[in-house]
Structure formats: C-alpha cells, structure tokens
Length: 252
Image (tube, rainbow, N blue to C red; front, side, top):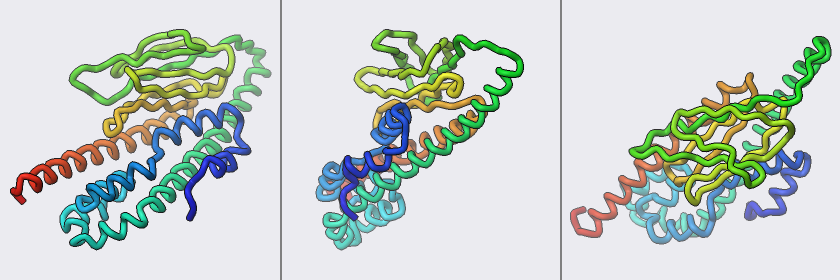
C-alpha cells in the first residue's frame, strides 16, 4: 500500500470533532514511526534486527538478530520493503486510535446523558467540575516534575505517583511539559474526570490519557501494556547494542 499520508489522516478524522482531532493527533504522534529513520536503521543495523524491533515485530527481529539477517537475505529484503511495513504499522495504529476515540466518545456520551438526566431530575447546577491529574507510575533515579499548562499559564507541577485536583468550567486543552518533551490533550467538561500521565522509557517522551469515572480500569490497562512494551523494546535495544559492540571488537 501507499504511504500513510497527511491526506489519508485527514480523511480518517473527518467525522471527529476539533477536540477529538487534537486528541487523535496527540496520540498518533506519540506512536508514529518515521519511514526514513527506520529505513536508515534497516540499512545500517538491519542484520541485527533493529529495524524490526522499531516497528514492534519482535519475532522477526530476534530471528534477524541471531542469524545476522538470515545471512543477509532478510536484511536485503527488508531494505526494499521496510518502508511499506512502517506505513502499514502507522495506518494500523491510526485506525486503532480512531476506533478507540469513537468507542470512548460513545461511552462518555451515554454516561454524560445519564448524568444529565440525573442533574435535571435533582436540579443540580454544576458551574465547574473537578479534574484529577495522576502522575506517572514509572520510577526513575531522579523523579522529575511534569509541568501542566492551560492557555500558556502554569497550573501546577506533578511528579511520580502524585495527584493534583483542578477545576474546569469549560472544554479546554491542557499541555504538559517535561524538559523539552511535550504533549497535549483535549479535556471535555462533564465527561473527562481524570488525566493519567505516563512516560515512555523507549523514546523518552510523555503521554496523557483522558478518562471518565467509568473508564479508569481500561485506561490503566492501556498504560500498563504500553509500559511493558516499552521496557521490552529498551531491553532488546540494549542487547542489540551490546552484541554490535562485541561484533565490532571481534569477540563474536
């Protein structure tokens, strides 16, 4: 298939709201693979399976690693096909993010409608709602603070295992910054009640996930799965670099 282009992304997002588009873009950018970068890795380190590890194909990556690209055969094949595999992966991830947004949107809309009926029946007037921001779970030797911004104004700083409660009066966009790494997420009043932050051990980036009260377990499972996947990738990358060093020194 052809490259997963900007036009195709826009066509995929055409029935999303502006805030959903921002959420889609934020999540997609955090998982998107650059076809040029992966191609360079395929040429330079393809015999060690680094290109396959980068696109999450652990099985073929290990096969190439322990057979030196199947004696160069898989290495040569991947040089000509790896960009298509990257495009397929980006397209798959984009569709999964899109489907996830639609499912969560429907679930949250049903939840919001239910709350709206209860509010009408009980004449509850909600001028503002509480939003809980949960700090990242990953542990580091020095646990840094993530800065939280709204409309370019610093709201708070949150660290490892911390929680901060803020009030929002309308739909808004929150921005998060850790050193030079940033991400943002659209927050919907009366729907999103929690923001979970997570760090990516493999890329060094940060991610934010919005959740209603009824969707917390699903979001936590997603974050945990991403964390385990990133740890595996980091361990494999260290293994590959170690073997490459030994190879260059002539040990193996």
